[in-house]
Length: 205
Image 1 (cartoon, helix red, strand yellow):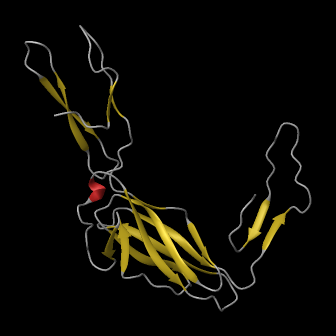
Image 2 (image 1 turned 135 degrees about the vertical axis):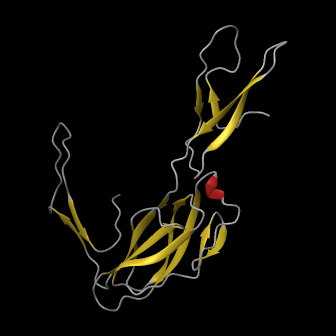
Image 3 (image 1 turned 120 degrees about the vertical axis):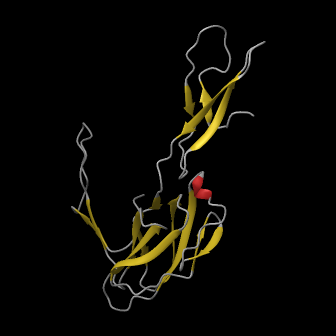
């Protein structure tokens, strides 16, 4: 049996004494340790095998970004992230934005019910992390002020969690840059702080 593709050797053959370095080509993102076998062979001698084990960091879940903004008209927001959990649970956290957790979320390309302890078919997170996403319908903001709501994702056993904030902007959006006027950087290139005050998404070009 050939060794796994993720194993990297400083040398795969030699003559006489040697110090062979065994490492991994990639970071292991799965929830469980991964294993493979190295097999040393030499003419007229019995092969010698050694198991190689790469440890896991354990269960993880994370959102891509920490805030998603929706215009005052409302919109469908897609929250995405990475995890290696057997299943995910979603709940609403702090905030005053009236939204609901949908009936389904997607993990590793498969739709999974958000209610109940439904595990992801095949448990892909055991060997590597997968993408997940959940779609939140944000209603129109009619109150004239910023509304927020925290979305929390947990693994099946509540051992790890991640959160993200959805922000619904009011009708009157604004963008202020302080100080006004030119931004001057000295000859040494010393950083200059520019304060941005806004209640909407913005980009520097």
